[in-house]
Amino acid sequence: MNDVLSWLLDAVQSVEPFTRTLVAAGAMLLETSLFVGLIVPGDTVAIVAGSAVGSPLEGVTLAVAIIVASLAGESIGYGLGRWAGPAIRRSWVGRRIGEHTWVRAERYIRRRGGPAIFLSRFLPVLHSVVPVAVGMSGFSYRRFLAWTAPACALWASLYVTVSAVAAGTYRTLSHELHVAGYLFVGIIALFLAGVVVAKRVLHRRERRHLEADEESGAEPGLGASAQTGMGD
Image 1 (cartoon, rainbow, N blue to C red):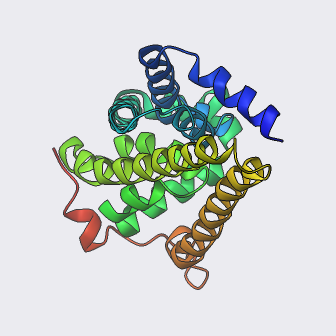
Image 2: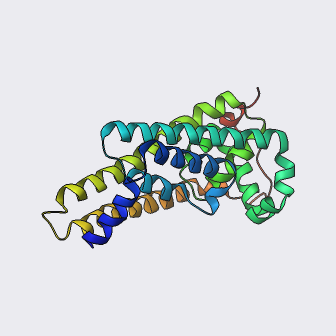
């Protein structure tokens, strides 16, 4: 296990830090703007890049790059929604996402306003659709950015920190413990399991805002939280 893991980590770390950070940032920009996250989750990108961090400065630089790229990607998604939202929704990609997903995203934004933008970063599928849906909704860009920025910062900080600590712990113990590789895998697995549980709990708590009103069958109007975020 140690030999295989060392080879993998060394292969990633052998890439020049600037190039590695640039690739991770580019992947995150695409992940948050053009629905690439529906195919290649940003979680994978952040963990692989974070495992190659060799110093606190590299870790901070990587996290900042991912945050900036995420914000740029979500801004692109917002702009696409503002200027070409209906066309995207009718496109092949929009149809593949599914009308049900678009409706849920719109409903969530109407009912929750700003908190929907923050929380969607941690919800499967919705985090790739919400920026475009927000752009179509008329929610102002300034308020959109105010809600998505802390979510992106929290997300990036968690993933980079955990993967960097796990890899650093492995490198420190690999020459002394034969089970160091299992320790690395265990830390990552435990973290990802916690992420899955947290997402399920969050989805369960937010389900009533995502699903249709079964009694009336009608969509509610804009709530107070949504109304305060609308407009330019």
